[in-house]
Image (cartoon, rainbow, N blue to C red):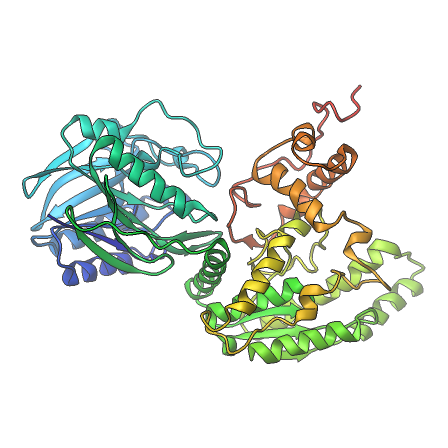
Length: 551
């Protein structure tokens, strides 16, 4: 039997377009069965669209359209299904062949961790689905029914193993529609999990994963077909496409990009789809001459092309000549449009206004005024030209609140908000070293932007390390605390940093939660990105911690 997988880039809610993509794939592929991603008819995750009965009805109508276009090649299509008995929705798959429904399946394991909240919308299925296809017994395992949380951090342990249940019913091939979001290192986990499941259960597995950006989530695809001996077919990550294989095809070593390349490809895809799927064509961002805005500009250019990106330089009285020159050099080497709008006149007008009204504004408040003036200019410029503004803050800054609300945090999308500062430097060097394979004409990021001490340049001789520990120490603490949910004592036991510093950083993370609640959409790269996947209280105290003084 020839097995096919089709990974494509759906737009959530565009049920007719998504159905057409599946029909087009059916008309061109030479296979006995074609697996499409989880909820392929509507895109994943549809979130509260599922509460609209009209949306569910539209999915059903599109499903019937696909059924009418089927022939000898059976196709698995994911969709929401309202159960006739309970009246509740289920995350379902229907299998069509020759215009007939030949099998169906409801997802049994509903993930409710990290960014997932499927129990909000669906009830679990309670029956395994095994059916005969061209004389072979095939079973369906929808996403988590296959992964069982083994590919994710902080996932629960499930009592039920749907793949084992399929095997006990004589299944020889597991067909798995999936919508598993990208996280750095996850593709290798997927490969390991697929091969281990195939070996343990002595089955072939065909996994089709969604690809594309959807709000904060990025899906890498990397659809794969395996036997107990290894990988026999794959679709390259971050691209739409199909792959076919037969059970006796030769195994090969799968293509797994480096963490740096996967991160660049993921962020570029996330930016591109956010722009395209919202109907925009232009991106704007502030260029400071620093490394964060340089990396963001490079990613935006890789994503949608230099002709669609504009960098705004907004020097102040504290901006160094070197920073201005670095920003101009970056724009030139990326071949993006640039515009210089100094903030000095606006800054002076603000100061005069406060002086005339005998109102005090000094210190940090005065520094933040400059960031907010820049945010005002950027938003006005983006509004005037009908484009989207990118925020340029990194994860380290967002974590400890080293960012200004309504200033440098302004924007529709935060491409590097899940990239620690140490990784910002690493990705910048990667882009410079591999510029040709990324579609750029030269190494775009000035070396001085990478090597000079980081500074917000909001006061004379300011440096980030005036307020923060060195970034290697800061990021070590933040990774353990944010990505792996460790407390002060557990972090101190794992790293050679004094507990007072750790306690101070964790306190800063807690205090900055109110800022992150108002952040731009942050593209997810790590196990715990800020946003939907890290739901922390704004008003809280850590009085349970032995490192804190309690009453």
